[in-house]
Amino acid sequence: YFENCIYLPWFTGPKCHGSIANLDWLKYSLEFLKIFCENSGKKIFMAGSVSEYDFSYGYFNEDSTPLNNSSLYGQTKASLFRLATLVCANYGVKLQWGRIFNCYGPFEKPARLMPTVIKNSLSSQNIPVSLCDKYQDYLYVKDVASAIVALINSDLEGPFNICSGQPLYLRDIVKTIIEITSSKSNVLWG
Image (cartoon, rainbow, N blue to C red; front, side, top):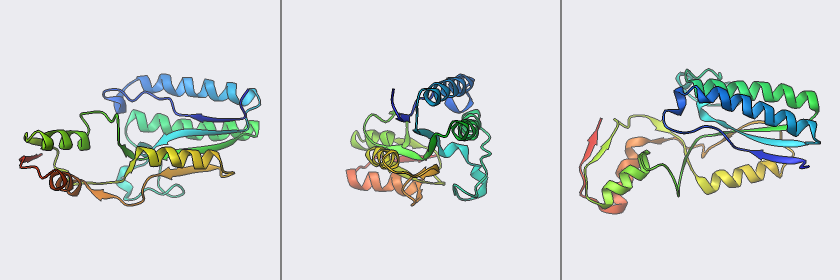
């Protein structure tokens, strides 16, 4: 048996934010948590998501931003957080809930913003993107992993935002990639 656990599984396939598969993952996660708690578990890190938050609130703070995202993905993650908090309290297990923001790095899905812009910039192709008029917080995948390891090695409990704390304007990300690659590609905004 293991006393500590890092639990990351969830469905993140195509159209995951509206997928009914989120209900299955909520069920699987609760079943796993129950088994862990009933078998001498002491501390568990569970991966949450920035998508739990109500995006219209303006900022994301663990203690004050409502967990009221309109997506099925966000709602099931928030539901898991609430239920895991109660289950862990019932068993005396420490819960660390890491709300992971936008990650980037190796093995990222090719259709995401940064891989698309990099690939098209390097091949001198047009770069079709959204209006990129939002701010988002990105963190390199190795830094996400380091944060998770630091948490599991600590005595801290509760929810934690795993992010850089420095939201970036998406247009600036696109422009920076084009500058770094010295690309002559045309950006097709919107």
